[in-house]
Image (cartoon, rainbow, N blue to C red; front, side, top):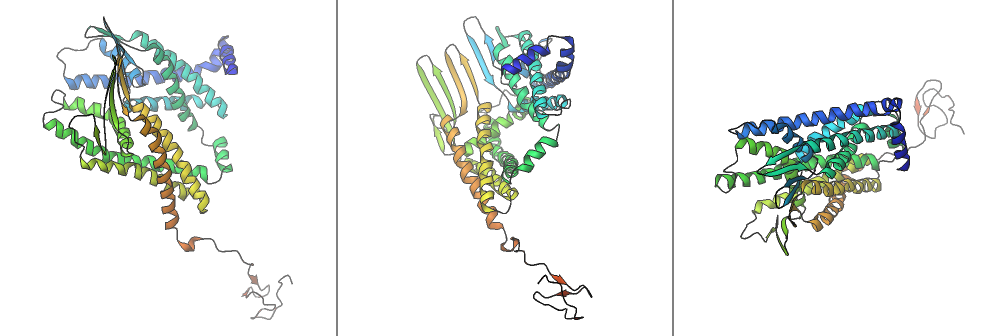
Length: 432
């Protein structure tokens, strides 16, 4: 860290150092920031048009788009009133995905100027530094009046979180900028476990998306039924609801996957010496009045089952014919699934803090920590066993025997152990 700080100081002390080390990252960061802001400006404009306001938003549209860009990166939005301060932290993962794709493209762009992996990572870090400074500057400008409260982004979050996302997504794009040399050599030195793990993780993601979409269909049916009954959505226009649902769909899929593992979605209110909580899951609800959980919610259990079993099956298939290596690769494929569940469950959650009280909407913390571990171990092992059971007994390689002997005179193949050719009588050269 000290060496990198010294490098940063040295790279900004001269015009030549600025041009050499910061020109390309600055161009990439400015391009990513402008592209992300433009995407948010389009989304905010669509929401305003679809909601059909009587009066146009005026110049507030551009400030609202800046707050939207920061919100997509999980930066807290602060509402300062006369008597209290409220902070809302919630990131629609659909919006974060848009920002992530843009940052990955920027990371791929700046990484083309470097050949070594270390140089590509450092240029992404410089990109992240410039992008974080731009985001911090945008947070200082974007201040809106909302019903008498001033809305602005958290300054600390606007500086720290954009830097983190620029490093994460930018490094992902940088890895795709050079598909040769170092990474190919590293993979070539490994046995079948690492490629099998990567293939298993990809297969699990595909399985989770397909099963998650089916699970979300059940949730959408329930929401539409509530809307037609007049219990929800009476004041929300269909276009606005559809656009917000698209932005929040990854959050809903994440909750469906975690709920399918057996965790409960909880909403808790704490503060002023009290605490209230309600939760609901596929097996029932608690603290939510007379809420009934539909029986078809149990179908959500198929989501983690499909994801983990497919991960183990694909990983075992890519790891090779050796059973021990296949099972090991399948279990390794469960590690990214567990970490991914933890990270996505945190990103998909939200909270509101005001006047010493807080409201949290998130999956059960304890269940989210331990249930993905159990599903990953059992599901990937089961997938590996299914793969090994489907292998045909005759697929094993035959044991190599002695090479055939051919007559040097007529070229006919002779039986093993013959000393003379049966066709022409020539003595065979068998090495005896």
